[in-house]
Image (cartoon, rainbow, N blue to C red; front, side, top):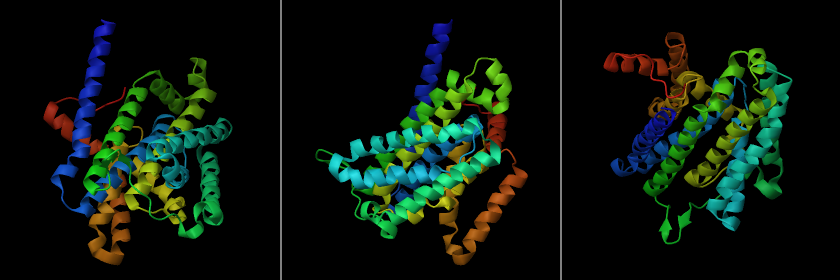
Length: 326
């Protein structure tokens, strides 16, 4: 029975992955506007970073305001080392470096909590930003790095917006599937136990040190990988792209989408990526309208916009919430 249930579970994951891949990659065939493809690619990259933050905050209960810093680390490693090593080596290298630094940043979570932990990660974000600005010998300083090339595999080049979007969509779907499998495993249950009650989780045998630190490391790795995809999308990077406001943007994605729900950051990333772009026709008023929209969502949907998806799911299927993780 256990073997049958395990096979059924993996089949469900595979079906979910193919559906997600089709949804993320389909704009490459349906859209002919470079600008719309750019927005779709940016949305996918936001999903990666927001999922990483949701692992830390939504599941393990460890707040972080350093996602922008890890995005910057991944982006600069890819931009500076991509021409030397190739994109295919520089991208995982950025994720690996972010993972290792995230391990170190996770140790303060063993001593401080809530807003004190937020201050620690906020300080780290500021330190990384200042390094990117001042170490102009390595990072280009305030001017950043230009002419970041998109990858290629032999004669196949991902230079065109449609092909690069397909690449981003494939990598995004793979990372999301890995996160979903992890959160449906013992790791996910341990993260939730820590979030709900650390003392009780420790009594049940959950290692607070190991799981807290790994939550930070995994979430940081996802941000580093997202940053490695961001540089080739824009063609350039500069320190202002990874300032503290960018970290708050990821926090907004998780909270508006639905904190502690796997689907939440995905919906939040779509809202945060698309809504500002659609409001640019209002010119100077669009930040105000965007802020008001976010406030209204939190007032009328305190559990995030994923609660609206749950309502539609209940009406269509007659079941409870749409839960991808247990």
